[in-house]
Each structure stands twice: as C-alpha cells, then as structure tokens.
Image 1 (cartoon, rainbow, N blue to C red):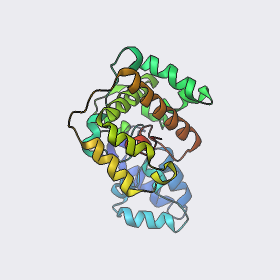
Image 2 (image 1 turned 120 degrees about the horizontal axis):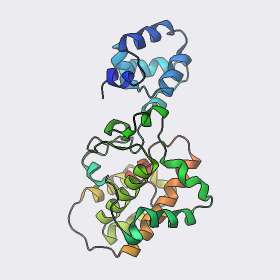
Image 3 (image 1 turned 60 degrees about the vertical axis):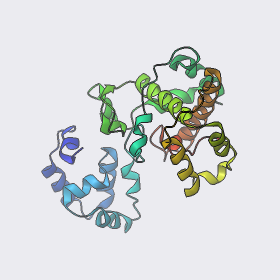
Length: 247
C-alpha cells in the first residue's frame, strides 16, 4: 500500500504529512509518537521525506527511539510469510474443529479466560472504521477483504493453525515439541527447520480430528497468553508462523 493511500484514511495528504515532519524535525518524539499512533511505518516515512529508511532509523536512534516499534502494524502477520501465506485461511471446519468448539476448549485452557477476546481486536482504531479488513491491514497480501470483526480474526487464527499442523508429519512435530522452548526465539536453526517443514506440501497421513484439535488448542493457549503478557508482540499469528509458540 502506498503512503498516499494509507494517509487518505485519515484525510491527510503526503504534502501535509511532509510539512508536519519538517515543522517538528527538532522534536523527534512528536514525529515518532504520531507515526506510531497512525501506523505510519519507517518505509512510509521514507516515502514521505525521500530519505532512506536507514537515515530515518539513525535519526530516531540518536534520540533513543527504535523504529522497529513503528513497523509491526498488521493484525495477523508482521513477518514475511512468502509462499506460506497460502496457509492463512478462514476456518470452515465443523464439529470439534469448528471455531465455536475450539474457542470453548481454549478458554478452558487459559489461566484467565477473559484474556481470550483481547487478542482478536484490530491493532489500530482506523483498521475497522470502514467495516472491512483489507490485505494490508491483515499483513497477508493473498487475502481478500473480510468483515472487520473479532469472529473474522478468530476464524483466520484457527484456520491457519489447523493448516500449519497438517503440514507437519509426526517426526517433524516431535522435533519441534522437544526443542527447548527457551532457545526457540533466538534460534535461526529452529526457525529454518519450522519454515522448511511448513513449506513441504507433500501429503502426510491425516490426523484424527480430536488429535488435531488438541494440538491447535495447546498452541492457541500459548499464543494468547504470550500476546497478553508481551505488548511488543502485535500480529496474532506472528509467533506461531515462525514456529516459536509450539511447546
């Protein structure tokens, strides 16, 4: 999405944004806070000012401001899913794997069931103003517009987790489960292994629905707890998509 299209959601032009930045160039906190409030990323600031993202990052860094905080704006995924974006789909399953059924199991698995609803809301108020979530807001370019509701995000959440677990054979899943949880976040080898396993589209033996539901519920409970406990995590699928939450 171009910065002009993004700013138009607030009735602001690129020229007005540029004038605002120039007027506050000696007050970087104001620029940074405004960019963060309206989901203006480092790349968008670069497009507005014509300075490189490196120059912009260094400018903010000199005032102890981290532009990394500006760049996670998507509801679902802020990493680059690349070919794995096909795994992100709405959940249309019934029975034990329906959204309603999984919701009930996950709420029971949480220490605080009230945490559940908090993670399926938009990241920014403007994202649901028009009643739809578009691909840019979701962070997955292959998705079509969906209704801007918690039910939509919940359905994508469960549909995607189901698709991910269907890509793992038992050997791959065993390796993931037994990899030390504390070492996953910083392990390039672990993330590479999970990415390769998810990229493998060869058929595996189908899992019984109750077994698949158990895997999804456990993963979902870990993800939701992590999202509530760590405000730095933005996309509801970010951890799981990189294989960081399975434990």
